[in-house]
Amino acid sequence: MKYLVIILFHFSNTLVLAQDITANQLLDNAIKYHDPNNNWNTFEGDFTVVMTTPNSSDRTSNITINLPDEYFSVNAKRDTVTTFYSIDKGVCKMKYNGKVLDSIQAKEKNLSCERAELYKNYYTYLYGLPMKLKDPGTNLNNSIEKKSFKGKDYLVLKVTYDEAVGSDVWYFYFDPNTYAMEIYQFFKTDENGKEKPDSGEYILLSQQTNVNNIKMPKIRAWYYNKDDKFLGTDTLIKN
Image 1 (cartoon, rainbow, N blue to C red):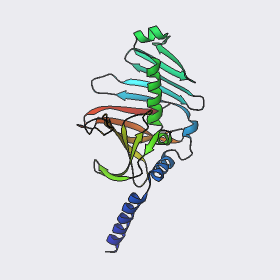
Image 2 (image 1 turned 180 degrees about the vertical axis):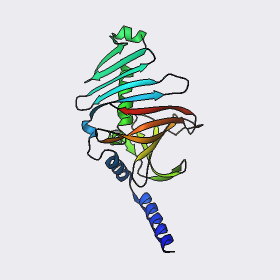
Image 3 (image 1 turned 90 degrees about the vertical axis):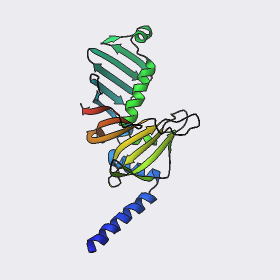
Image 4 (image 1 turned 90 degrees about the horizontal axis):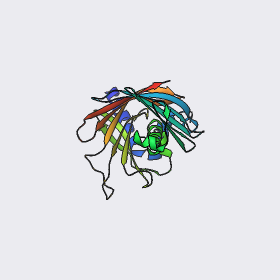
């Protein structure tokens, strides 16, 4: 009986904490877990991401992010084709199989500076989470939900963005004990800003790799929200 009372007391306290914690407190706790030394804002590092998708060859991307120097590059290889993008203080460069391309040649190969910017935002955002949720234009819903996903309970933070940043609605799932980020999920919106329930994807994060003392997910597995269809896996390899 004594142990049952202790268990019930602990469980009730967990529920109270889940209800009382604010969005900013949850985010701060998650950042403290993933980036305890506040290294993200001065991040300088490289890592490799191997993308595996059904019915396609693997794509291996060597990525460099240097936030203080405003530099980003990705050198990706799939089969016999290698593409390279870099943005150095806003200046874009592109290569195809090692050859530097001008804008006309790049267009012929379906490369563009817009795509370079897309890759920069994509990799910097996803591997900079949850720290990137402090960026301007990010709106935290102050109501924290407690949800169960695939049999595990999470504290869930809902995030929307200013129109200039993005229109998708994101949900971030954190372990209620450690505050580790283990899932994120997004939905598209209609012309009225309402979520489309059959749209978007969810991403399961597993294992961890320490990059510059930041805990980053080693494996990200992508699925459609509407039917749980598996889309692919990104595996981070520390250089």
